[in-house]
Image (cartoon, rainbow, N blue to C red):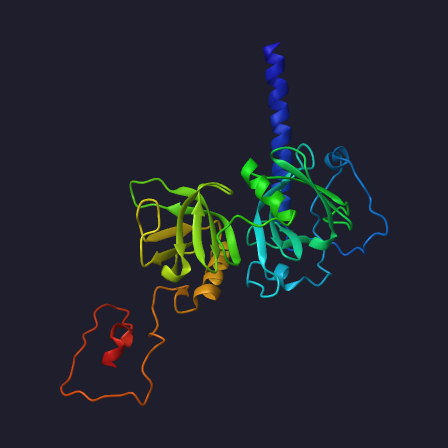
Length: 332
């Protein structure tokens, strides 16, 4: 009995792994996301949760014929001024055994869209006004019903699952139009980043958010606040390598009493998204993709000059001299 049971389970696991590998290879060959270009239906087609699980709700690779709203098309490249971000993060689309897909969802004041991943290409979007019903199915799942087709299959229902009960509650509240629980101010970006620690300490995956007033990190999505830094206290944000950036503040704000954090992203595109948001909030003089610091913006005008007696000699050492960047502004 145990021998036949072992053989059955091995075959089942191998079959499941084959399906996942085939889907992973298919996702890696996607060059464009799918956008629903069908016209709104005259009647709202209703499907049960069982119908959703039984249909082959794949994210097909088709041409993008629709014109994307700026807040969606440039969601990973430039914050939109007329459509503010409400919530973003990973949600799993529940479609049945071997067909579930984890996608990056982004909710703004006007649209709900999902992407292949954070920093990836858009798959589909729908106007928030066309979301007719939000129903909590279980502590981890909720059902989104729309008045027009949403997604690659053209169905009007989508079953979604959060990483945790807190994450699901956060999305459920946001889609119902309730006030978000993040720091006050306009939300620019949020997501999981690895908080790198010095040698001898363990790095931790934390949930980070940045608004135009605070930079905050939590234990998990919807979890406990671990540290918060006012934007006015941020000294600078500099990229480090291809996937990381370093934020330095004028005062300690972490739980360990540090005024500097190093955050590692999953990809260079995600790193660039965070740097761009910091550039919009702080300005290019404080948020930059290099470690060189330009001259101070409050330099004296051409008419505000003075004379000195004597000379001053500067000696540059090393192969890469940065010229007057190492000379104080008042010495120029």
